Length: 390
Image (tube, rainbow, N blue to C red; front, side, top):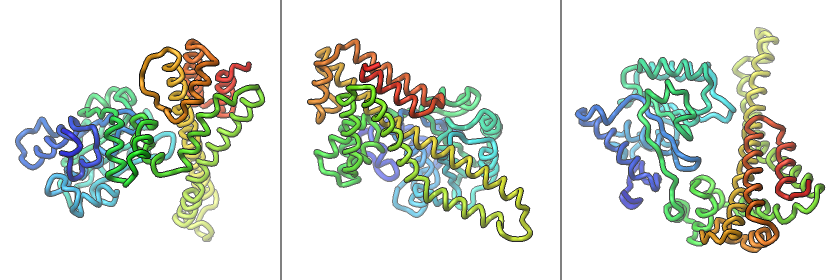
């Protein structure tokens, strides 16, 4: 199935023809009621970052609810895809985890009969972030599903979910979209010119969301160029430490730009809900609730900062991959063709073994950030290794 044959809610699921075919058969089984094996109450969407896991889950939810099986134009399809349909719950957390209380609220929703549509659908876009206690609660609901309830879980890999949960879900695995497919999508959906679309698709390495940001934002492209110039600037210990500080501060600024207004809105909404400032409210309880919110907001900011640094690591990985290709004469296309001068300069000043060491150092830094090592320390250690100035 090519992108040209995709229509309705499936239009933007580029490079996922096999997945769409499976989902379409399940939707057809809903209408015909014959092939019960094609449809089940719990699904697990897996695939690499940017492949479109959550988009596929949303499209499937819309198709299940749509009288025409996913036309993409009716009110049902539009409200499901926008997150406004009363019988489709979309869960996407900005926190580091999804706790048991949140899962219990989802289970409560799952037990409710649908009001307008055939199913009560729950789409959990970050199922890999469900805590162990949350997974135990979720398992009970999946094992004994309410009538007409469908769970759609999304995670990078099946191993990111506990075995008991994933074993009770039907898996659909999305592939990494090709550069050609992403380029076509950017041109068709976002009206990006062919040259910019092709460049963004290539450097995004299969991540549709990242490609779209790079294609639409000159600032994003400039920031990426600045990151790719780093390896040629790491000429002293001081330069490494200064660059690490700048990267961490930029990541903090990115997180603050996203969370500042959201944090304020959430605090105001909680204060209103608690009736803070009125005589009938117990100050101690209100303050405890506000502290809990502030802790959640702090965790969200930490996650966003880590995500920003992870993009830096991804870009640096692509750079040293290109360096290694030049050094070994592998003859593969370069991801960062626009930075060929920097790539060739580093390639001529180092060996393939050193480039492999740089790639290993990036991996170590990523693992350190995941283990909650202080970002500044992790980035300093990385840049010192890349510069070879220790």
